[in-house]
Structures are given as structure tokens and as C-alpha cells.
Length: 404
Image (cartoon, rainbow, N blue to C red; front, side):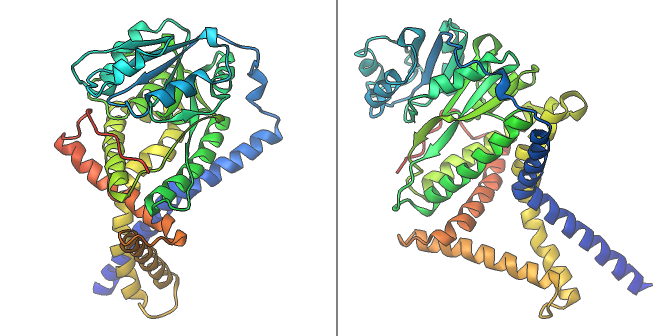
């Protein structure tokens, strides 16, 4: 009887182990493989979204920037904005600088053609966006950060996708300046965004991108709805609420915003923890989007690309280690079998991550360690962000992470 119970227990442990391993693999690599296969099949049948694009479509647009104490970036940002290849008579420039006390509004007021809205009170970025959007009169509004520069063709590349009436939001690409001297976190961030960019291309081709990047995205102005003032991931919530109205979020990597990577691990942790706390908050607020019977493909993409990464997958990364140990002890820890090999793989992976951390603080950088190190940081931040969300102590008045 005891032997039967032990066997049944081990069978359950093995099922949980393989299920956990599958979900982890699917979250980070499997979904991309599934997307790639589906896209290849779609292309075989000649389905293409580019057929609906009108390159002559040229509506008025508003470049909208919410800024808090960005005096060091203002002049460069304005110069970049006014150098973009689009009919300058059709581009409005709006900045909302609420709470800034470093002279940012004064510097902006020295530039012609820039409308500045300022209040002394600092209520967070989303409050500034809610207030500033009341002054937008163009059919398209393009959001961008003060410390990022845009590619010369970015407005054109974004706008042409709006010629399709089904498109409600367009996300540009976030790029990271690649430098040999980048920290492990910075280099890892760059590699992560390259992978994310490819997934976004496939997401858009399948149906819709799952959330826009705040560094550069645009919506149809009449689809704007005010967002709760304590929202942490404004770009994510704004864009997905547009998608929930029946429009798609499209992606154009030829429209891009470029910035430096985080200056160091501490700064990257600060940013990732806030994003993780915001991710949990967003899942709660966008809970209707989990209804696959209502939103279909969008729900499939949302769960596969975002929800799993912010909830179940980080938990399973912790669970799978003790499960693997239990099975390996049963099967023979020092015998050659699939479980002992997988356990060895996990040990080596996390050892590489810890070694990367150790070397990073000693200014020794090995690129081979960047991926495991950044992967570890990302998932550690989910735990820290979840704790911060539960405590409710993640302020919307966050300090921007320092860049390299």
C-alpha cells in the first residue's frame, strides 16, 4: 500500500514538474515558436496587412510629452522633434510639465511652436496626460518621452498605419544604444528588447500587439479615455483599452525611440520593479480581457505574451527547482537521466546569473553571462513588484531610472 502511495505521489510530482516546465518554456520561447508557425501559414494563404496602408495619408498630429524635471533633455528633444520628416505645419507640439521645478517650463517657453501646460502641483505622469489630452485637437496624438530621440521617419511610419480604419493604436520600437561599455543589465536590456521587437512584429501580423511602449506610441484622439490617477503602466493600459474597443494595436519598427540603457543594476531594478508592480495592477484592471469568448485572439495573445510572464511563470521558476530535486533524488541524483540533466542545467544557469552579478559589481563584464543575469533580474523584480503592489507603496510620482 505504501509503495502504491509513493508511486502515486511521484507521478503527481512528475506531472507538476513537466507542466511547470512547459509553461515556463512556452512563456519565453514557445509562444514565439507558435507565432512564427501561424504567421508562416497565414503568409502561405496571402494574408497581409500592408494592403490597407496608404502612404499618402497625412493628417495633423500632436507630439505629446509629459515631463518632470527634464531640463537636461529639453533642447535636444525639441531639436529632434522639429527635425522629423513630416509636414511641419501639420505637427503640433504639446508639453505638460506639472510639478517641474528645475526650469523645464521656462526652457520650453523659449522655443517657438511649443505649447506648454504647467501646474506647480506634482500628481504623476498619468494625471498630467489626463489634463493635457483636453487640449489635443488633432485626430492623431503621438506620445513620447522627454529623454528619447525619435527616428527621422517616425511620424510618417506611424501615421501610415492609421490609414487602416481598424487600427486604433500604433506602437513604435524602443531601441537601446549599444555600447561595449554597457553594464550587464544594460546589455541584457538591449538583447531583451530585440527579442521583444520580433514578437511584436509577429503579434501585429497575427492580429494585434499586446500593449504599446511608452517611449513612442500613438492613438486616435477620439479613442482616448481618462485613466485612473494611480495607474503605473499608462502606456499599457491606454493601448489595451483601445484594443478592447474593437480596434487593433499595430507595430512599426521603422518608427523608433532610442535611449541609453540603465546606468547600472540598481537603476534597472528600480525600473523593473515598478513595471512589475504595474503589470499586476494592469492585469487586475484589465480583467475583462481574460475572457477569450469575448476577445478571442487578443485574449490568447494577452495571456501568452503578458499575463503568464507577470504571474504564473515567475512562481513556477521557484517551484520547479524543489520538484526537480525530489524527482532526481528518487530517480538517482548521480545517474544519467533527464531529470538529473535538467537539474544540472538549472544549477548552471543560476550559477551563471550569480557569477554575472558578482562580476558586475567588480566592473568585470562577460557577455556570455548577460542573458542569464538579466533573466534572473527580470523574474526577481516580479516578486519584488508583487510585494510592492500588495503593500500599495508604489507611487505614481516615480523617479526615472538613471541612464548610462
